[in-house]
Length: 211
Image (cartoon, rainbow, N blue to C red; front, side, top):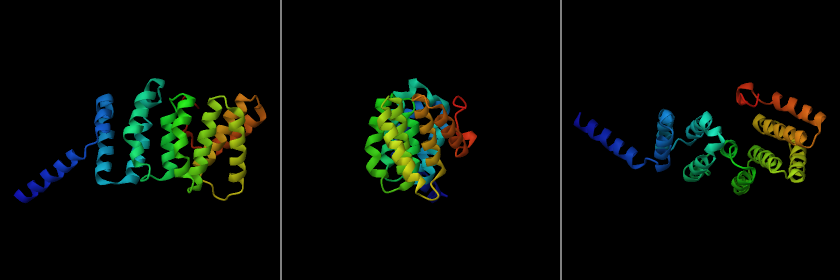
């Protein structure tokens, strides 16, 4: 019994030593999410990176992070915690996390965040497609329509020449294409891209506000 108690104390001490300051900051800022934050800490300590990725996506889907007022604190969390796992996470999942982090940012800030990840996703086809579609979305938001159009045209050709492209990449591509068509006043293209976006996107994955 004494040996077991000693082991438990040692495990607890290791967990405490590995406690993330960034997660502690999240606990203070979002006490209502403490259970989810504890889960993140558990996966960090156990080095279970697949589970950590899924838990992060779930955590970042909390409504509080979609508010414009969350932009600065979300970016801080990204810089202090999430970026450390770039080489550990599945590349496509990392781009999905990037998309969530960028959502409340200004378009220019989002592009600044996105750009450094081009090299790291290049070897993963679907992650590259996701990244390009996300960049095109932020270029559209920034009013850089010619650059967005050029990127989407290249991406559309690449996707069309491939087989079994991930549905998430298809979804992001058609969503961004619809956004660009709307801004450029192309209703036929907007309708076509919107229909294709819905074909590749579960309704549950679309925020209620966007529906």
